[in-house]
Length: 308
Ligand SMILES: NC(=O)c1ccc[n+]([C@@H]2O[C@H](COP(=O)([O-])OP(=O)(O)OC[C@H]3O[C@@H](n4cnc5c(N)ncnc54)[C@H](OP(=O)(O)O)[C@@H]3O)[C@@H](O)[C@H]2O)c1
Image (cartoon, rainbow, N blue to C red; front, side, top):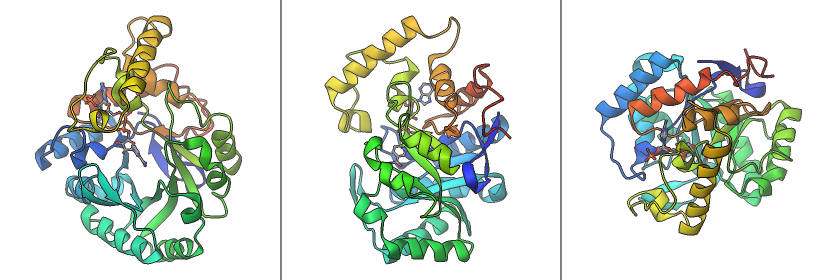
């Protein structure tokens, strides 16, 4: 594993983290605590330290699995979670976003995670008029003063390029890390978002680094996903087909011989000087250990500006 500094937060994080939306049950699989424990044992072994979760991956369900899995060595991990959604049922959320809502979600996340502090507490896909709320900023400041939150992050929506105003305000809003969609099929943060992060010394968590699994190379164009999971439920079939075709072309034209497509896709993200780490979502031990191995790809250079 390799480690980098997450911007001004100074947190040291593994370049390969673990995304845990999957634990909430919206990826066609329900998890047991035993399965999650085994995935965390694997993460310990391979040196992963950064975990990304959220309040609405199930009703604090993902957080509760994680809390139980890491209670015994909490300080070993960098825990990133989020606020601003309420899970009502699979594929259905509401958006409580007042300062009081943020406070009650924070307390619920701390309880579920079985911890008294969160390393990175992230706005979860907030619109501009919500993000620029002084009340919420003040409530978060209080949580930092109380030691319940170590650092503030901002996970911007998939329409990355429309959130440049929020990203540019990171320093003023005490935001030390941006989480955004970035992968070989979606380079929208490159022209504006990433330069602003570099300028402000704000770390970047690249999410959906496998393009929801399409960049693993295991799905062929025309593959049909069940409607018990996000790809079958929310993804447009035509967009899906185009992405899977693009991946076939990348495998033919760009993928070096003998290299695993998922490894290549994760390492590709890590090459950008703005990107601190990737947070691939994982469903089993094999995916945790395979994704960690991507850190070894020679092209993940040691001279990255955030290398520690
Ligand atoms: N708004 C937000 O803040 C937001 C939104 C989305 C995601 N996120 C975070 O970002 C994380 C990552 O995004 P994501 O999970 O949506 O997409 P992703 O990481 O691009 O893809 C995850 C999927 O890829 C497949 N996969 C993972 N590792 C693999 C491997 N080594 N080989 C083959 N297939 C592999 C798995 O599905 P299959 O095995 O079923 O193919 C897995 O569910 C999430 O877990 C979550 O923590 C945040």
